[in-house]
Length: 157
Image 1 (cartoon, one colour):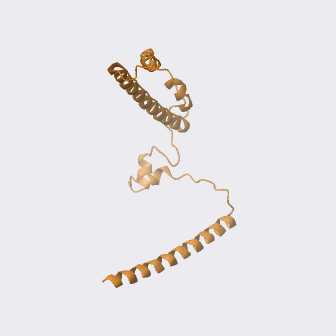
Image 2 (cartoon, helix red, strand yellow):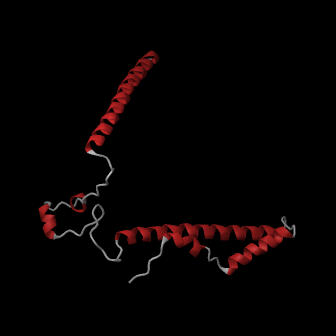
């Protein structure tokens, strides 16, 4: 069985900075403590430290991205093996293709996930009527604004 990592662990994993990185940061701090902030050596050290920080930040962003993707995959495929997932993927057979007249439109095979919104049918209809009233008002405003714009443009012509 494969080993999976959680994205939540990325901060702990990312904190494993090499000894070289730590040493470069210590050197820079020593320059600051000794008040040697203007020397060429300090500027060079500061530049090296900033490059290390940029590499580290890029590394942690990449690590977080990949670990998040791994989490996403392991949620959908917990055994680490392919399986049909409604709304995402399906291994269609030749018979399935024949039934769909050999259409390769994925929606015909994977289906859709219907999310429950918690509303009863009456609540849903009421909410849709409210939204329709708002839309009707906005459409009427749009017609009025269109007329006003046309009138104003005719004044310039």
